[in-house]
Length: 340
Image 1 (cartoon, rainbow, N blue to C red):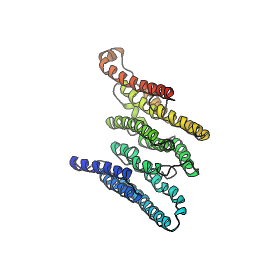
Image 2 (image 1 turned 60 degrees about the vertical axis):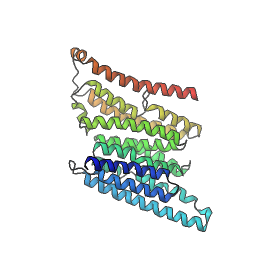
Image 3 (image 1 turned 30 degrees about the horizontal axis):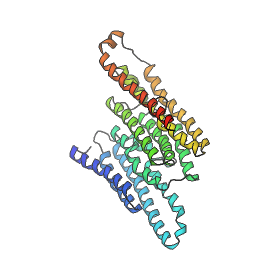
Image 4 (image 1 turned 135 degrees about the horizontal axis):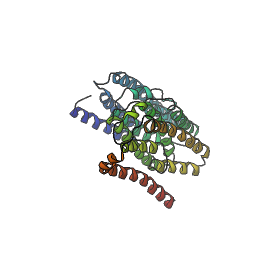
């Protein structure tokens, strides 16, 4: 891992590359921003403590270089075709989405995502699942329309993201397939405008940051390790309420953006897609609940009442956090109903 000044410089370049891509007026400028983002993230991935980071960074570089070269080729072809036949550039508006989908790991272009995530530290996993998706998402929104390609990518991401996490024991891979599932939801939110996508992305990033921070603090990498968290039971509640909120279970705050997306899809006459996404969300809730079951029921040691009474200040603080998470979701949902 680079030292602190180097890490600060690379992190600044990472965010700067995203801002260059989002604020660019041309596809060439957006491509340059993506390259700056890539070149700053590769050194951040390296770590002396984990021998798998070299393999993960090499895989990530090859995939991103392939996507970037394909994007540059399509941008140049679009510029040439527009000079010859201005009416023939329509297909390139949709084809340009493919390398961007490969960059952020949307299904069916997700084959590299789980293996790369498995070799990264928790903080780099958080960057991969949140920050690194921002620039490709915003670039996709420029050519996002309701068509066969878009709906196919959304359905594939939601289904593979749900079913792929069923037989996983690694927390990193479970969160990876959850990220693929949420990518389908975020692509759906882009159909209704960037404001809804911003809301969904912020809530998703907050919940993912909570889960990854707790997993890093207790050094959890697999499901069976959640049983050995020797700490207050309230810490487990914070972790698993965040997981359930990430799965979109009401009344937590993670349900609010999902509800708005479903409402927008019904208004756009995409009822079948909405029903499929809701059913697949139940599958993601299954493997979240499986983690909760193994931690709370299997080999669980409960504290005595006297221990709870002596640590009532900590429990009060945790209870306030949990209550605020639930109430925030309820308040937001109520406000949404009143606005509509």
